[in-house]
Amino acid sequence: MRRAKIVAVSVILTGALYGCSQRSEAQGPPPAAPVTVAVPLAERVVDWDDFTGRFEATSSVEVRARVGGFVQSVHFRDGDFVRRGQLLFTLDPRAAQAQLAAARAALTQAEAQLALARTNLTRSEGLLASQAVSQAEVDTNRGSVQTAEATVASAEANVRARQLELEFTRVTAPSSGRVSDRRVDPGNVIAGGSSAADVLTTIVSSAPIYFVFEGSEALLLKYQREARAGRSAPVRIRLQDESDFSRSGTLDFTDNAVDPASGTIRLRAVIPNGDGFLKPGMFAQGRVAGAGAYDALLVPDSAIGTDQGRRVVSVVAADGSVTPTPVQPGPLVDGLRVIRSGLRPTDRIIIDGLQRAMPGTKVAPTNGRITRQPRAEAAPTTYAPPAATGTSAAAVSQSVASGD
Figure (cartoon, rainbow, N blue to C red):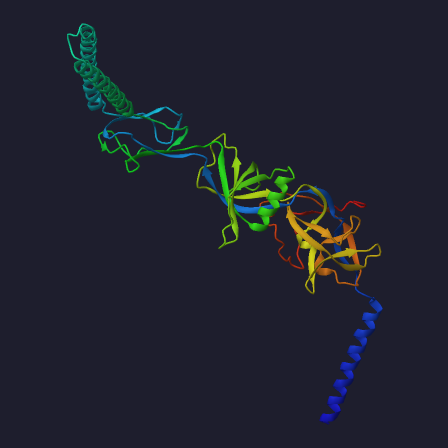
């Protein structure tokens, strides 16, 4: 009895499977997968090399007093833009004024001694003709004149030194730029006259400003060959909170040696900064043009898949069949990947629905369009392996219009 039941169940299952097979054959093959296709975007592009760097002032000065003394007053507000020669601090000038007065008095005394020595020399020279004085006395008077002249010269130099000390009680800006806050207040006594003197404030230039970054030896060679060919290297800058590289400058300096430890070299660009928005010490991302403009084909990064270590795009034929085509990708440009070789301008590639397209199968294509949309993420110049599936909404704008 048990065996009869098992046989009956087997017959029922076999019949069910046979019925499903018959229905599947009646329905036919599954429908073609819907995908979006587009031809590559053909445009002239420029390859950019990307760096992270820091802004530096073209001029930075620590303001110190040339003489020590009592701080009498401050003549600027913290953070002001100051011009070269503008008065910043005033020290109490009375001590310097007294020293200058003493130096002038000493000069007057020396000039009187010189006048007396010259008179004595003239008188002795007249008496020498009548043999009233000896030659030795004339020589002595002549020596007295020379000594008095030297004393006058020394007194004049002392007067000039005391005048300088009086001028140094007025601390002026040695260069134009943005001043920091004051480090001393009126009423303090400061030391001056040396590199160890008290720092009163600092001044950094604001326009233009340097952008300093590190580059590899390979990039250095490329830039040098571009410079020998008479082509300058433009630079684009983007701050941390900016979405595009809106600031521009030019590469103006490379260091004189490559660091043997890191294999990099310091490079510098000059960036206009008329509004003073960029500050020394700020970090930014920079792009340096690696070569001249050239014609290129661009596709969304998500349209590139992998096949046994190769980079491929899925090309759709006129009959809807899908063929993986090996390509050589290049850098990203405004969210799109440059294709250096392997793709023709008329090839229709899948830009959406790549996960539904299998090699050798047929798809139902809908025409789309590839557009450039600048964005901050599209910066790396080294190729990163893309995912085999997915859609780049920023790079693909679908158009359902036929024939597009």
